[in-house]
Amino acid sequence: MPKQTTLDFQHSNNYDKNNFLPSGCNQLAFDWINKFPNWNDQKISIVYGNKGCGKTHLGKIWQDKANALSVNKESNLEEVLQRLSIGENILIDDCDQIKDDKFLYNLYNTSKEVASGFILMTASSRPMDWGIELADAKSRIISLNAIVINEPDDFLLSGILVKLFADRQLIITPEVLNYLLLRMERSFSGAISLVEGIDKLSLEKKRNITIPLIKDLL
Image (cartoon, rainbow, N blue to C red; front, side):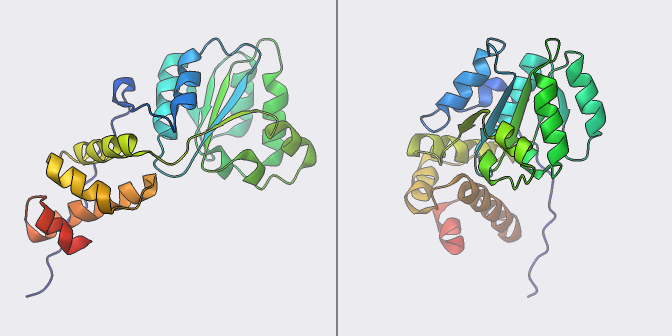
């Protein structure tokens, strides 16, 4: 019998503030976001960590809190600088993907203006590893307040699994959750890949998510 083709239905991520899971690995970043607007003279902050660590979620929370404009590497960067200079707050998601050293240099300098807004950057790596070649830009960016989100502990990992399944409108039993926690790769990216694989296999085999099903995958 030919293998059944499954449709890749899009699922939505829940970025509500109350849906974020604080833990030891992300507490500093979470507290800093909640401290806004009391960032004193630190106009720019960076939150970074591996895929799936929650940096985008924190960015969305800050965006709502700061009424910020969300931009990325596809945005008009000159317009970003103009809007920053007149006091608009800016969220730059995946800032390490913006390969424009001059923009980063001007972004830093513009943030020093009295009337400028605040900036939150998210990235997958520390500023030192962004590949910035312009010396003046690199020295400024690596001097910024940068907060890392480390890999999850068991408490957070269990919450992440429940959330990832819930985002796909799937519910797992405590027995299945415990089985996964004992055997899975202990990382954000590992959790994402695992849930994607289980969801796909469940659809292919038209079976509920049970330990026997998961054994077929692992």
